[in-house]
Length: 239
Figure 1 (tube, helix red, strand yellow):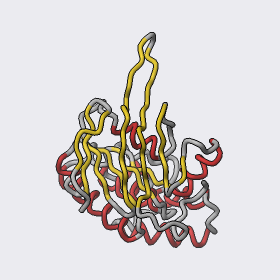
Figure 2 (tube, helix red, strand yellow; figure 1 turned 90 degrees about the vertical axis):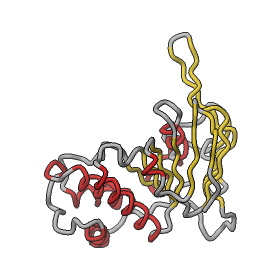
Figure 3 (cartoon, one colour; figure 1 turned 180 degrees about the horizontal axis):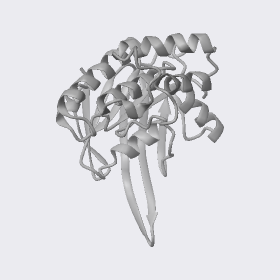
């Protein structure tokens, strides 16, 4: 499962969670973080997952990204179960087919902006010259074409998140997982970042799943699903 098949399947569904449950032991207690979630996300959809802190949003993203596995139930991507794959296969899936955007940017501070973008490309074996062209094109697209040799700390929060989006999309992943991508930004920067995420994701045909507590951020999505205490409690129809 190193990469997501596209031409080999005609099913519009890219991501399918079936009774996905995640439990953790906390001392002598068991905490249920996700409780029997059934969810289908189609190719190229932009879905916002909303809910209060602790509702299970980040855990849901972690299951889709194979960062974690469900305690029970299944997670399927392009018809293939992540749960039944080896850790090596899941690592290849994360590297090749998933891009991550985080609230606190998670850029590598000792690398330049350009080097942060080159990293996922080089991990996927893209030739250096081609990788540099892709990185520069993305920096141009997010309005930072002249900042490639800067280090992240020289950039504002909004600029760092623009770089983080460019990095997430650098290797053209099938899935982009964004965990509270506007949570550390002011309103103007948040609107800018969401616009870039939507536009650049659409250009690459990516499916975007965004966890957020912000109703304004959720408005940028095609569809909104809501979690409460680990359960899916509401969903808007697909656009």
